[in-house]
Image (cartoon, rainbow, N blue to C red):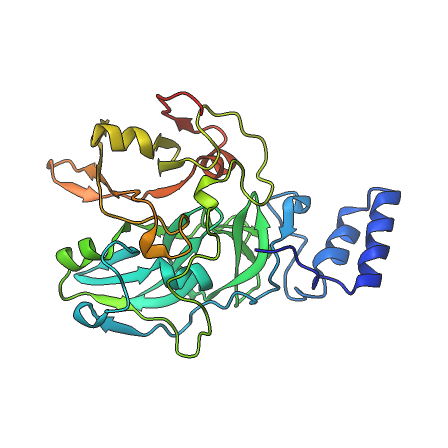
Length: 337
């Protein structure tokens, strides 16, 4: 996302810079100066973070429009997708839906209902974090939008009911009335459309919104996979793999994708991780379908009866795992490039 010039009018922005340089402001004054006008309903007296960690990502609040009424087509009618294109595959009570990254690349959030369950399916391109949540909190059903804000290069979502801010990577409310609340993560697979079609021939595929006006199928972050560093600050990092190396993260453990690719299968306790080729990276080529092969990962947990069930996980960048799981274990097994 390009740097924003819309946060404050230019004269006000210059005054703000001079004032901030003169003396460290009280946190309440700092918060009002940076965020107050755009977030009148947000309770800034409740926060789990230092608000100075929040930065503007470029687009303003809702400048990246979440999808609130997603449209779907049966798998055979999803001709706009190439076989290698990545989708977020979510299955609930026998209903299977695919949310293409070529769509979520431009919208980042889809509020949906699947088999009667209200869900939010999210994708943060800057962290390559694809996560689905149950959007029920107690007796409330929340709807989420894109704040235009970032923390450690990860999308900050907000709920429209209280305008609390939520860290996408964690599913945790970090500012506002809902601070400290955790959304339930749902197990998904990031897989090629061909694999989804094979597993769920009767499944549904989310379509680009009518009148969306985006270049669906193209990657606005072309070459991001090959960068040495993310576009935005992300905190301290000293792990033995590059910051933008993909890792398979399961809770507070992660394995480099390259290690899993070389092994084909890794077992760790009750976890079973497997890799097979055939999925294009969404963040490599300017055309998503032409991206380098990052493969298909399946993460499952062995149940008491020995049956394997899909486990909550994320295939994200190493810097994001370390930023939000500072005490987590990265099973590197490879030298830093």
